[in-house]
Length: 273
Image 1 (spheres, rainbow, N blue to C red):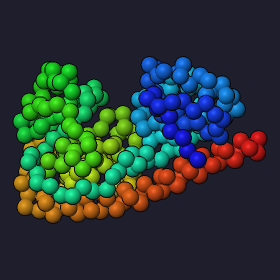
Image 2: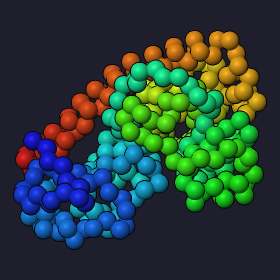
Image 3: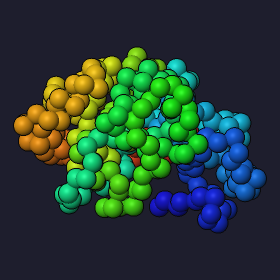
């Protein structure tokens, strides 16, 4: 039996076998949960995270012995840990196809570790979706793309459905430290949107359970423009989408199974102890 609690839901003050936290913010309202933690003084606490650059706040760190993560690095090695593709759990299958109004986009916040890739690709043909507070940061580094506000993500009505293609870049840190493919990969498949990967992401692609035609690996803004005008672009895109949708569905089930086994082992080991 599983109970879900969030900041806008009541705290269930009962005893549990395992309590999983997904919070990383230092503004976490821990006082709401003090009674729950007190009641569960012998319970096993797990932290679940899909961002390598987040850390537990002190309230959690005192209790957590287990971590479920989307990445592998030294920060989780001191815990009993499970590295699994958490982002597959958000995949909602492919939407019905809709007419494409725009060519290519990038969306997301300003991340300093991607600065050189922003400057490399965000030129006149691109539409950049980001919070208005970030516009000046991108403009100051020389990005001359078109700007728009944040995309909408209501199921089956996502703004991304209107684009033929999107760009996948990653933090330089993850070139060497493996992190499962980001949500934008799964969002692209859902929205029937092709995805061009900067060649620096090749290591991540090779370690991931995905099927990426070398056609979609690029080195420049100009190469993307050329490939989107290639007569085989639509056919290649459909093959890319179809193949990866099948792989994601299979991996999603494997992820859920591995998490269930991991949690069951925690409970069983506790009972044996």
